[in-house]
Length: 118
Image (cartoon, rainbow, N blue to C red; front, side, top):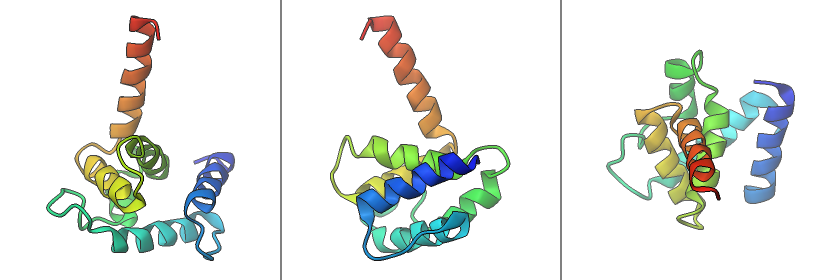
């Protein structure tokens, strides 16, 4: 992942969810996200309920930019809820099924907008 993209993701989390935790670098970002994941368990019985970011990185990290997908997904799910835990939970469920779910969704939405002239 390019450093600028990682910095954008870190800034996104600082702006939305800053609670005194200092974020520097990829490892700390992953720890930060995992602490948030540990608190979520809002929607039970989803595919991603027990997953951590490390699980996704280990399973798919060589094929997909998981941190980008996670960031994109959380933003997307905010269309449906204003609660971080629910947004994270839904995103992890999607990523556990298709690790590039959010990129595919974004591409489909862009194609639909062009097709329908929005």
